[in-house]
Length: 220
Image 1 (cartoon, rainbow, N blue to C red):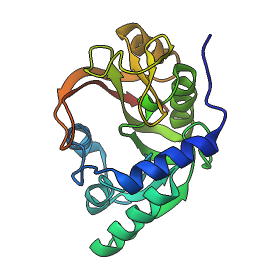
Image 2 (cartoon, rainbow, N blue to C red):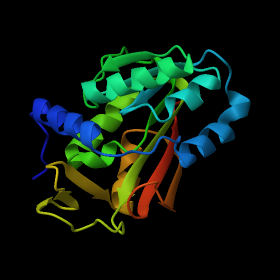
Image 3 (cartoon, helix red, strand yellow):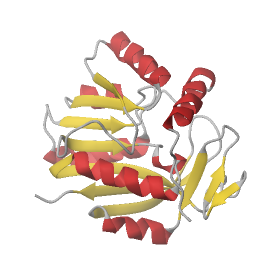
Image 4 (cartoon, rainbow, N blue to C red):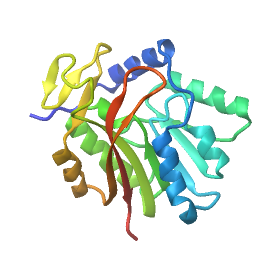
């Protein structure tokens, strides 16, 4: 039976603690940079862009300097404070909003670009689908969506207590879901995939990850 995270306050507490106590990369995501560079001929300054689960804001200065009207949202108030401090130091003007992935506080068709980096894997499968539908809802017609998911061949697969198929509990009490190719294909029921790439990456901290990088485009 698929499970849903019902206690968002617990999730918020866990991520607040994570952002207070753990190191994180300060550099923008390389696969996100490749996504933006590929789309560059179709983009123009002033386009509204939403970074869902922006964390401490590692991607925000890069996106803002390209001329996008950048919004960042995250469930963690600690992360948002760190992101705000980061952007103030750079002199950039961005907007922030406390938000949960599955209940985004934005009107439908609000953003020309929506990105969601290293967020979706930390939910149960049913929540991931719910989150994908929310990302798609706030995306404008002719807009582009970037998201990533962990693959079942990632090194952390099987670590921790099994909660459901392909989902395990990490030491911090957060579920981690690993997506099969079949699950990636099933996402076509909720969005229009343009590209699904299975890639290996070496983060600044920790071991190599195996993930899916997805690009989707919304028709008019």
